[in-house]
Amino acid sequence: MTGMPLGATIRRLRRTRGLSQEELARAARVTREYVTMIERGARRNPSLAILGRVARALGVPVGELLK
Image (cartoon, rainbow, N blue to C red; front, side):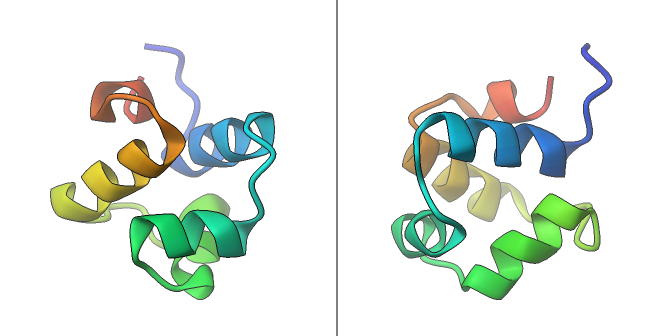
């Protein structure tokens, strides 16, 4: 376990892939505001369904988000 918070992991992966929050949100079928909340840590426990959609949008397994 890296100890990196979920939001920081998602932000790092999103930026590495050159995606804006809006692009990630659209691909994961959530709002940009929701992505912002996750990345800032204001939404710490998104549902497994949403994590799955975010992971697919980022091209990684869900486990990669939870490391």
